[in-house]
Amino acid sequence: MACSISVQTLLLTPKLHSPSSNFFPVLEINKNDKFRNRKWKVIKRCRAMVQQTVQGPSAAYAKEMERLSAKESLLLAFKDAGGFEALITGKTTELQCIDVNERIVSLERLNPTPRPTTSPYLEGQWNFEWFGSRSPGFLAARFLFERFPSALANLSKLDVMIKDEYANIAANMKLLNLIESNFILSTRLSIEGPMRMKEEYVEGIFESPKIDEENIPQQLRSVFVQAASTVQQLPVSIRDTMASGVKIPLGGTFQRLFLISYLDEEILIIRDTAGVPEVLTRLDAAPLPLVDTITEYES
Image 1 (cartoon, rainbow, N blue to C red):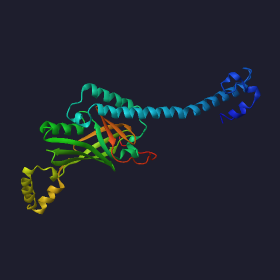
Image 2 (cartoon, rainbow, N blue to C red):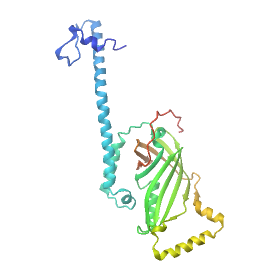
Image 3 (spheres, rainbow, N blue to C red):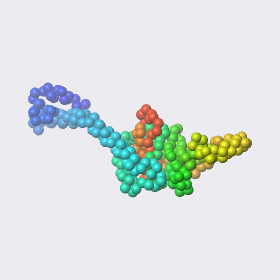
């Protein structure tokens, strides 16, 4: 209703056209004429709407290019800092840390998902690329490397599977490059706001170790065969317990709050109550985006 006078009509009106009007017409009016003053305001409003329509897609494209560039810059910073191994072994320098954190902040301000806690992008399998000294992943890694030399034990990867309001954090560890064992920390997630979530630790599971028989040195093969034979002679109940792993019930004793500061189909960034960032990259295929539904949050 405000733009009842179309731009095309104004352009086709000879009395309204002026070479100095930058494509849009200018009325030759008497300032004392209230009716024509009202028309002039309508024309100015129409001009602003048309300019916004022309500039809108261009601005959105530029912002998207800036976001993609910031993502690439952050991933390169991880590589320059030595990657996952350098992070968990404490070999990352202060300069590398501040450089990574600067790029994290640059990407967070371009977050394309305003309600990440209810976004379908949140679910899936994610790999830890970066975490601070207060995160559970860093504490588990430091616990391992403080007790086992790197020649004996190696934490090869740390990832998390988020599905149906639960998260399973899996740490893959190798001993002597022969024995592979997984520690899985199961947590329950609850939504507390558009960006805020609560994580409660449910249980920890030490899975039964797996031995790579092909890499066993020849001088140790006889010992391995004897040990395997001894295990087979154990009662079925004990063998089943060993196969299923050792479970440590936590019962929600430990919990933490965190914010999702960035989320798209490839990268997830969260911050704990101290503001320490954790950056994860997706391992599986991203789901199709859906329209977020309004959720009642518990305060």
